[in-house]
Image 1: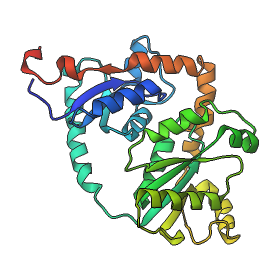
Image 2 (image 1 turned 45 degrees about the vertical axis):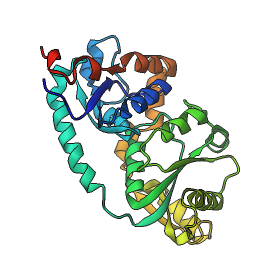
Image 3 (image 1 turned 60 degrees about the horizontal axis):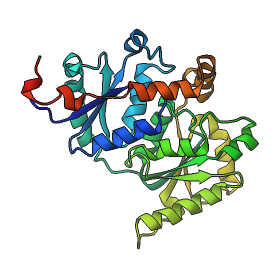
Image 4 (image 1 turned 135 degrees about the vertical axis):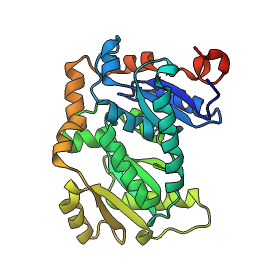
Amino acid sequence: MSKKDYIVITGIFDIITKGIRKSVLEKSKDGKPLGVGVYTDEYCESTNFSRPMKSVEHRMDIAQGLNGVAFTFPATSRDFSEIEQAADEAYESYLEKVEEAKRPKKYKAGILIGSFDLLHSGHIQNIQLASDMCQNLYVFVKTDERILAKKHKDTSQNTTKRAANLKALKTEMVKDVLYFDLDSTRADAVRGVIERYQQDYPGETLEENDIVAIFGEDLKEKEEEAKRRGEWGDVNIEFTPRPEEKMKKVSTTAYKRYMEETGGLDIYEEKEEKGLNDISETNLGDDETER
């Protein structure tokens, strides 16, 4: 096997943990594009990992969003020689997308507000749609206190963990993560973005009409009314599709229920740490490793 222009790690990527974030970042610093092989549902069931709560397609979406990850592909083994073709095809697709990503954006800055509990593919897809609209996307994570007060429920992962997962996403998707606490308003979010943008780009100005606030279409009526009341000032409002049927299956509520029925968060985090595997040094690269 000849040397590759990329490196690979494999894992479950059902729940993002500190260990996952650290390993991905460390491997991405090796200088080559990092590919992540995400274990298929069938492979997980054939090992002691058991079946993940999210499908392999959704777990690939999560892994793809992480900072440092160039491409993902389904992994049916920890042996690179058995998954090499899938990795090669994903790498070629990645090279094509690099060129596509150079398109100009409509707005200078964007605002996205959410809980992002048990980060899932719906979150990632929505963040990607939002980042496609603006040069810099600032994501506001609702604090535990706000969620408890407004929604009357606890989060599965606390504010710190949820913010850390968002900060681990690609910078071209998420420029920075800010907090939407108990007393935060829409106007506070706008001021926060303007201040942070000016810190990021000293000497540049950012007007309200350079900003877009992005929401799922299920919040269209609510946010359009807020716009009419002047709570968004001159900020633009855009909406992303949120298919009702998909939301029933791909949602924090659905995953939280499943997780609680199958052992709880700690069990899933433990499986993630055990499932992560660096195969790039053992059999990815040198002719001597050919079997």
